[in-house]
Length: 74
Picture: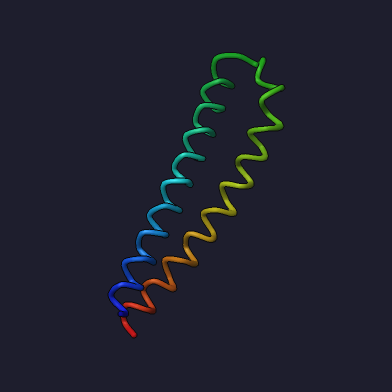
């Protein structure tokens, strides 16, 4: 059963990482926008929010991964 739990945990962690990567891509888009023009101010509020959410997701991700490893060694 532990193996199944571990796989479930790994899947959740991978999902989390994918979401974080998606978030990072959005920030890259924003940075790209800033490089091209200074007319990104409207986007800036949204991007800032994305960035905070991104960090939150990433933190949760790391927590999940740690739990995963504990389960595996247990």
